[in-house]
Image (tube, rainbow, N blue to C red):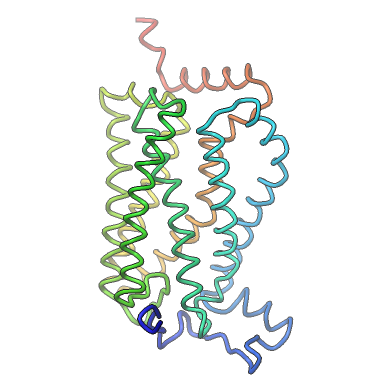
Length: 305
């Protein structure tokens, strides 16, 4: 079993380390709350993650009854699958955001790395599957498109999980334990490659949108706004990882900011972009929204020429 252990980080993630008492706790309720909110990365890292991830799960729960009814009526395999995966990943993300103290707690390195691996892989699956859906263009519908999308996404995410597992458990490289005092070049090199690939794919979709092949993409400006947002976040994260790999403190701060944005806002952004309109009560209203967006984007300009 020793071969599966991740090498503990010798120094804390921040300037303070969570101090456990003899029973393995943190010395009572107030101390636990203080450590939960203020220790490790600090208040402005932990609280936004906890608040926004909790709010989104509560939002999903408050609309669950209406959403289930709409899904049962529509019988859309794509929407049912995405909604189910979104729920699972949202719960994992809430746990990840709420247990930030594990990252700095001696003896919690293994549970933290496993939780981080599953959470980030689930979010990556949603990212890749939505990109695969967009790249299929206007032909993405029905069970065949869903199967093709999930197979491609599953293969890509499976390879990503395997590579990260080798780094974590085979090479003992602390991928998910961030430390601005000790730069791990191999770790940050992997993140540079990871962010570079995502940035390149989002950039390619933007290129298609501004080229003569634009009509092959789904005719929804909301998807375009989503791609711009994800391209920007990944480009900034790529720059931050490159700086951090060179030992720059600003790079670590910038990378931490992208982590907060990603885990706090990505799932709500995905919901608003891809699922929210589906749960509208009136289909006529939904069609009018789509028509207005397409008209604003200029898809009907050719009819007047």
